[in-house]
Structure formats: C-alpha cells, structure tokens
Length: 440
Ligand SMILES: Cc1cc2nc3c(=O)[nH]c(=O)nc-3n(C[C@H](O)[C@H](O)[C@H](O)COP(=O)(O)OP(=O)(O)OC[C@H]3O[C@@H](n4cnc5c(N)ncnc54)[C@H](O)[C@@H]3O)c2cc1C
Image (cartoon, rainbow, N blue to C red; front, top):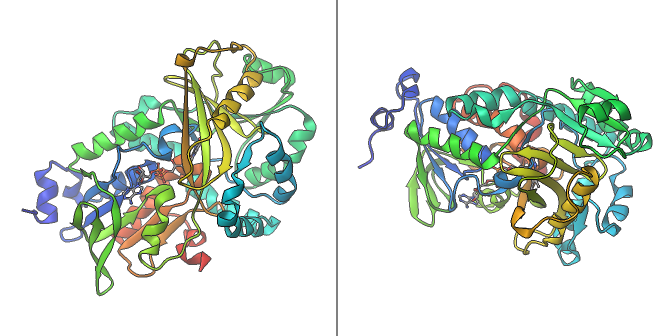
C-alpha cells in the first residue's frame, strides 16, 4: 500500500520533511542516478518530497563514473570557441590529437556540428560564459555541503586546477578563453617555467607557462562520491528503483506516472537526468532537443611512479591528469561516434602516451594489470549549455541534462534549481539561457 506522501517520509525516517509545509510535498521520480540525478534527488528530499531515483544500472556508473573528477567553477568557456573550425582539420589528422570522428557517423552528427559552429561567434560565446558562471561558480561549497551530510567530505579537495602550456604562443592562442574566465570573475595566478617547476616538480620541463585557478576543486573518486550521496539519500527514506524510464502518463497536462519497463510508477513530478540518454524521454513529450554525445576516455595507472598534487590540464592536448584514490587518472579527449559504437581503446592509450610526456617520471612501460581504461558519454548540446527547465507538455516534467564537459561541476547547483522549480520558488540564478525550448 502506498502511504500518503507525508506519512511515507516520516515512516521512512526522513527528518527534513518536518520543516515542510503540509500538503506541499510531492511524489517525485528522478530519472537517472548519475551525479546530476543524485544531486537533484538530495535537494528535493531536503524539501520534504517523497523521492525515488530510477536507473536500470548501478548509480554513478554512467558518465559520472570515469570523468576527471574536477569541480571547475572556472570552466565557463564553451567547447566551440571562435575559430574552432580552423583547428579541427589539424586535430583530426593528428593521431594523438584531442578530437576523433567516426566518419560513418558524420551524416548523423552533421546538423549538430552546424549548430555548434553557429554557436561559436564572439557574442554568443560571451553570453554562454556569462550564463554558465553562476551555474558552476558555487560548485565547491555546494558539493561540500552535500558531501558533508553524506559523510563524504574527505572525497573533496580544493587544491585548484592547473593549466599548463608548452609555449607562450600556445598560451596566447588561448587568450580569449582566459579573458572570458577573468571577465566572469575567475582569479588566475600565472607562473613562468621555474615557478611552475617549484609548484609541480613532477611536470615536464617542456612546460613553460602555468595558470592556476585556486577556487577549483576535485574529488578523488567520482563513483564513491555518487555512491555515498545515494547512501545518504536512502538513509533519509529515498527509494532506488531498478528500471528504465520509457515516457510519462499525463492527465490534463499533469503527470500521474512515469512509464517504465517495470510498469507505471506513480509520481506527480518527474525530473529527466538521464545524461546522454535523455533525448527520447524529451521526445516522448514532443520536445526535440539536439542532444549528442561527446565520448571521452580515461586511462588509470595504479601505484604510479609520480603523481601531480594538483589536477593538471595539458591545454593543447585537452586532457587532465588527476590524482585519484586508486591511482593517477588521465581523462579527456572527444570522440564523435554516437551512443551505440563500441569504444576505440586506442583513444585511451593515446592518453597514456600523452601522460608520459607530461610526467617524465612515469615508467616507459607499465604491466597491464596496473592499467585500466574507460569510455563514457558526455551529454552535450551544441551551445555548451544544459537543458534545464520545464517540458512544454507538462509543468511537472523538468529537464536537467546536457551538461557536456562540466556535468560534475554543474550538478550541485542544477539539483538546487530543480528543487526550486518543483517547489515553485524562483531559481537563485537566471535560467533563461538554459531554456529547453531554445532549439525549437
Ligand atoms: C573523459 C571525461 C572527463 C570528464 N571530466 C569532467 C570533469 O572533470 N568535471 C566535470 O564537471 N565534468 C566532467 N565530465 C563530464 C561529466 O562526467 C558529465 O557531464 C556528467 O557525469 C553527466 O552526469 P549526468 O548525471 O547528467 O549523466 P550520467 O552520469 O551519464 O548519468 C545518467 C544516468 O541515467 C541513467 N539512464 C539512462 N537512460 C535512462 C532511462 N531511460 N531511465 C532511467 N535511467 C536512465 C544511466 O544509467 C545513468 O546512470 C567528463 C566526462 C568525460 C567523458
């Protein structure tokens, strides 16, 4: 028997429901238990709602599993910067380059690429950066708050994020990106070659410039973080439902249940946080959102010979080296090949080659049992902004997906905004730029 929402929360031991105005609590289904879904579920639960998280797999095993773990509030620059088209041929030809395209996938992704290039004008890029900053800027204090309640604060560190360059000319080429960051309030410390060597002695002496953003943080284990947040969610009375959402049942424009492969799940609000798999769920409500996936890889070395202390991005190679609980993780690069194609593990091994150049203290060879590889699907939209807002068909279905390269970073604030929308409170930041209807 289903208890009335309020009684169910109290029966499950949820204490935050006590502060909720009677009658305001709802039965909310959060579709997708990645970092975004788990943060949304956590904030919704704090409002006293009865919340269930729906996922066919284990929480945190989508893109949130193997990313670089960085909470970079400074990452306001979109993927497509002005002039990106000029760099693409060089990247595609270079086997070690940061971008790969499966040519058979080109016809399918072409409309997305056209939108991406159109979004890369100086004016649009400035507007995208301005929109993103309030969504990602407060990430470290917000994720700390969630992690503290879950007893997981030890998984979060704030040592900054270091961007390193092999020449002054390479840094100059990134001038617009750094200008955008500074214009949006990011404070940057710049180091020359000697200072950089003192800061991170394990880095190659080939790097001659380093830029440190101290406000950024990272988690030493993204999966453990999601898992601990889920455990806290369950302790507070949240439910996990092992099922795949298929669509929604509406009555007069109001949600009555989420359709799933385990049957209809009664709900009076639904949050779509299914990452790169969210497109068909939005389409089920008539919203055509040009969600694509930018696939990325990681390679990890257990017991590495050297490890940077600060997460470090090779600005040209577009990969990050992050010190993790289980070893050193090199993560990054973009492969355009859709959701269905099998991984191309050469892309992960390229990261190892690049990583050895970044950290010459690493051995030239590692036994296979000390290496592990992973591929994940970034949920990406062509303007590098998420879809965050209500569906057209029902005010009860809220989209929160498409965070691309910054989903870990944006998740804590996204979750808060979702809770505000469900409660009918104004969002703490301007969410108009994330309107899911902007592509119509
Ligand atoms: C190599 C790489 C490095 C990255 N580094 C960083 C970084 O350092 N910092 C950062 O901020 N971001 C980073 N990202 C991006 C970040 O990982 C993603 O943006 C983020 O994890 C997306 O989270 P999510 O919750 O939206 O999606 P996911 O974590 O993919 O979760 C979606 C969940 O939805 C579930 N699901 C799918 N379909 C359904 C359905 N029909 N019904 C129910 N459930 C469903 C899936 O099983 C999955 O568990 C990186 C990504 C990659 C690939």
